[in-house]
Length: 431
Image (tube, rainbow, N blue to C red; front, top):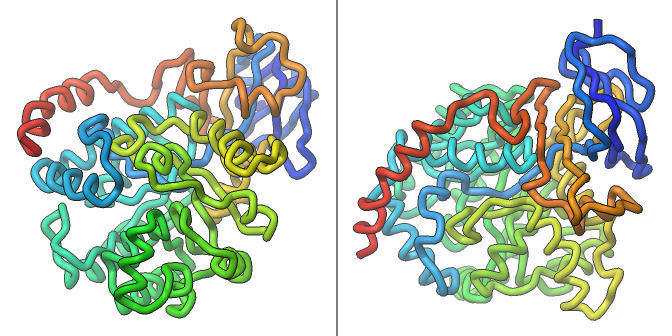
């Protein structure tokens, strides 16, 4: 018998044809077996009450454990902001607090309908453990940083730690290991190439901050005589398994390089706006065929990790910045947050759209409230009107993760108390 049937839904599949189906979704052994017409009987039946069913969102750039420092550092550009952030992280973070923060962040993501995340942070084993506790898909792995890190490690420790992470965390559908150098201004050429080689040897992912600010561009140019993207291209580390966070400051030739190499750009509009980093040239990237995805960055730079806010900004701010109402279409914005993100994580055949045979990673949104009525086009509603407060149910592999707006896999009360207890020490760390 079918494991799960969701009835009475409007299904935004986010498939290549942009199909919208009225009816239901059937799930067996974690996979979608039918869309539209579904069996009459199942082990469990959910009445969506006319709600919008759509894929779980995919966040391709996050620092989830930085939720511990939400709202701590304000009104600074990236470089001085980072100095304060790193001071706080250095005082507070260890394997246990990183796991605590990652758990907090992953709970926030799941409750807002995000089912997959690429997460760069200290103590990645803690992120992996928190991901297993909460039950979403997580890509994380060894961090590379040439200076003494907030985890007490040195540059010499990084390759060994990355190797140990790969050994301890083989790839599964839920855990996608990789290597995560911080950036070209904090990691030298040899270590960037080493991190990429380690990932390539395993067919794994590789992610790095790239051209986030004008100061970063100037620093890299002063050090290596060229711009960030050109520098990375010369090192041979750009390809479709490379996820570049930000890419705000890129000239035409650099955009061409991104298109030629197939490197992925993780667009983070919230933190780019709040840190005054600038406007990524997303319309020009899309015109060139660059693979653009969507990220939230960390809650310390955007105050939350809300993919719906990132989605709406990605769809709107480039219209105003370019003076073109069609600069980013509704469809393109949705793809950034769903199928493009899944493809970037190497799970495009598994997640990112609702199709028969794919994993049942989906969310059910309430569309009965005043801001959702009338709903002429489900895709337009998802991009421009929906919000995390609309998310009622969330499934990963057909298993409940959020039910009636509450986590069902983990009781967060103790975690929230532990985070609150850290507040005095966090405040004191930057006093």
